[in-house]
Image (cartoon, rainbow, N blue to C red; front, side, top):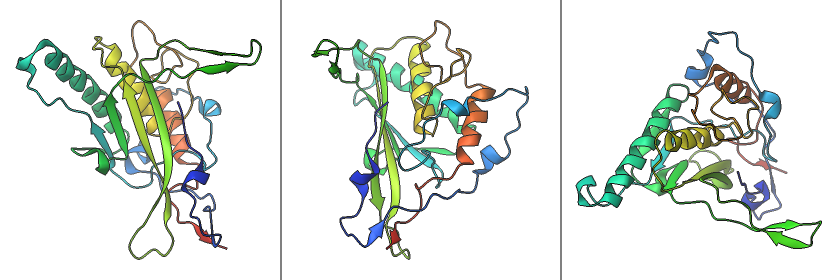
Length: 237
């Protein structure tokens, strides 16, 4: 999980300031969500960003999934790529029951882009030893950046965000879908982890990955009920 500062997206003009946090209307899918099991949530584990909670306010959220250029029959590596895509699309379908999602064919059109690539290994400075440590390789990573979006008939640009998800190219049965499901949960607004392994946003991998749970959706719904600066225009000083 990595991010960028909302300052990265601020207009250079001193005449504009970040939007005041406000709530957006709930998407119909979340508004109609009923908790069938009486489960609780893990909202207390969710971290708001300097721009507020990572809420999408315009639907459907557009999702790009990297695709192979060769047919599956071309080679073993091409077949593995196609299997990877199928696993990722399963995760997209899983989440589309709770938030409107739309697949797009061009990355530049996407709000969320999913790439078949291993996350880079970034050295971490160890204050005790005074050296940089290399962490273990990870199979997935979600990161976001803020930007300003111009909209017709609105004077000031809107504070917006985009997500990039990197997923390992290795095709591992169940685990690729589980990783995509987990990272998509982050990209859709759950910027934190569950402490229970029965939730899709559990902080660690498990042998038998769970589906999206009622606790996951309860948490998502609470997030979308919170105020945020995202999706609102900058304000004039």
